[in-house]
Image 1 (cartoon, rainbow, N blue to C red):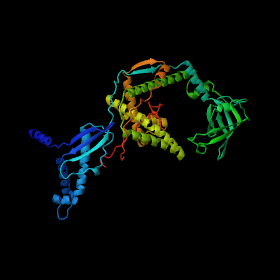
Image 2 (cartoon, rainbow, N blue to C red; image 1 turned 90 degrees about the horizontal axis):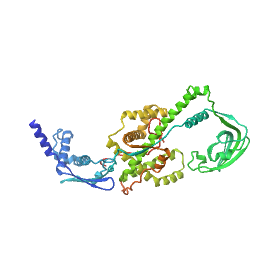
Image 3 (cartoon, helix red, strand yellow; image 1 turned 60 degrees about the vertical axis):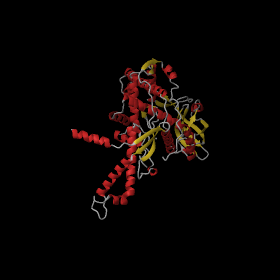
Image 4 (spheres, rainbow, N blue to C red; image 1 turned 180 degrees about the vertical axis):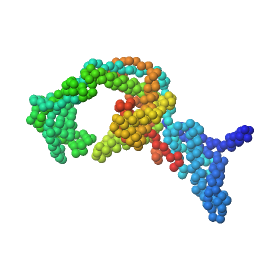
Length: 502
């Protein structure tokens, strides 16, 4: 025992420590200066040449017998480079670990600018972006309004009426067209380059609707009051972002020759109707509708309360953002939009126009999404909450059922496009907020009061990041709960790791 203790003390005394100095280099950025003592360099060189002696084949000498001076002459340049790279990597890693630096990515060290000295210490420095220093408010007793939502008898009857319409039938109608009717018409679309005719097109009489392949505003005003045999004409300016390329950005003259008029006859509440939807009678149908509506309202309440917690936390946290990471996130937003436009078949000039417009807002979008990411990350660490593998598997199973694909296939797709990591963050955030809601001060309020109070609750203004120094250097549904979709929060792209030594 005594011998083991002496050995440990000797090893501690012989440990060679690097000299590390850390200074601020801007918002969320640290400059790390490292000095590796000459003794450590000599020790690393000795180890390198000892390894060479054991393995190198030198003419005139048996393996392991070549003198060091000959090894230095033959392998000196390569050995010095290998030792330098190892010292840079080990010293930078130790500097960050020993000083608890939470870097966003790994240090980017230009090794070609660092020389391995013939004598004296090896000195180098590097900059790393670090996580923001976030002072979270108390997570207990957060004031939250719970909108008082109830399912009325009128709501149930309205839902039954809508169900009757969905299961109803279109029947021929004599007389004039009314709102919500349907017509069968021959449609002619004429632009400056071509004419297209579509026979027996189905057109629903709504405020805005498709006529053939174009959308017409105030369609009801054009057609209500007309009858079979009439012809109506109008012109529409098709948006430059329209999905149908041949009409994109053009003025299209539209002619509608009405052949037939139909009206919707709602399904009767009879035995066949109840059998079709799997209930015994109207009372059971009303019970099912009420229960489903109440579950929907509970989710709606929960979503609103979760959003209040998010906005409260964002409003209480004031911190700088890493400039380079904001720039990378902004670039990612632009790239995703560029890809969408390409897939939509947009022309080059339209893409350029939209990208120029987006550039003015992408920085702010990036800052807001990163701010939310870092705040919720800090909350998760404080509460010691993570998404478990079982929760991620459950998420994938429900999403796969929703999309009607196999879970293993969806997992592979999500792993490829990065949405698997986003799902994990989403699950973690919901768990964090639900934990906070357990101790929140919840007040039940009228829905209109809650809406008015939180109407302007948006992501708070963020500080301007320091100017970015020049360096070398994709719609799926987002789920809140299985089977439910919610507004997508742009998940910040994780910082791509940099090479330790380049």
